[in-house]
Amino acid sequence: MKLGVLTVLFQERPWEETLDYLAEAGVQAVEVGTGAYAGNAHCDPDSLLGSSGALNEYRRTVESRGMLISALSCHGNPLHPQRELAEGYDRVYRQTVTLAAELGVSVVNLFSGCPGDSESARYPNWVTCPWPTEYSELLAWQWERKVLPYWQEAARFAEEHGIKLGFEMHPGFVVYNPETLLRLRNAVGPVIGANYDPSHLFWQGIDAAASIRALTGAIHHVHAKDTALNPLNVAVNGILDTKPYSDLAHRAWTFRTVGYGHDQLMWRDLVSALRVAGYDYVLSIEHEDPLASIDEGLGKAVAFLKEALLTEQPSGMWWA
Image 1 (cartoon, rainbow, N blue to C red):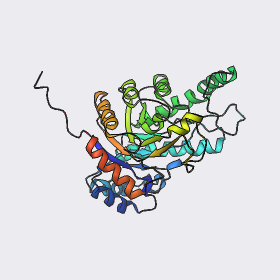
Image 2: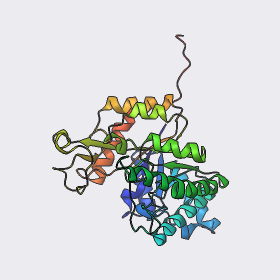
Image 3: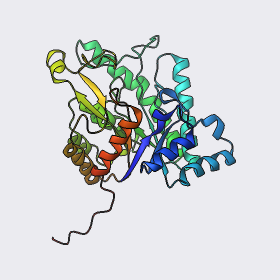
Image 4: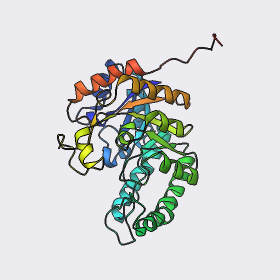
């Protein structure tokens, strides 16, 4: 496995300066945002597509530092009920798939999106319970009328370009846990897989090793991000929390640098579970810790994961 970083946290730094910083830190791969929520500060499809010279130069900046691009990321909501927003996210998605194919990058990371509750809706409606029964009816309508028709066509577009889609399982969208990821994959095909980010699963009460086992063969990419739960707040109000991320003292959970939510043993178990599940690609650090600076938080995550990662192929079982 290789150690990577999602470069969005360095969007204020020039691209080559960012690459130099990461290479010096021992990072082997970069995941790059191409628009939508992540922005495109380091990779603007409009300036690269259609120019072989620009594409070659972009590849050179990465490869000359001994690194690879693990994925392009375009997290948005192409199922948004406001048509103009959905079309904008869809445009970024198709540009990103096209660009990934031209750059020789095999994975595009993204969200599944979430539709509204009717053809006239203005905002997404994420269903979290089956009763009253209109919620079950709404969920069926969303999947039958919006989710499956869109992704069946959009996934064909990715397949035609030789690209795998890594869906980040994120509450607020229709794919938010292994069950919903596999539901979409089973309906659409193996082009659909996970960008496995444990941080969004931890606060839902999902075990890393168990969920990885359930997703065997369906993991296309992995994020390394941690989450810390506040047991005092969870004990009072549970895990569903709409307070701002900045209200750290009162929230049920907070994103943390790797190692500040779960210990080294848990992360070693996660890495081992990935290897058993057949995943041997990149763990891409996503730094969103409100208690740590970019440099310190990323530095601690790199050092922590270097101890947890298995970077060599296993030996033959000489003892058996």
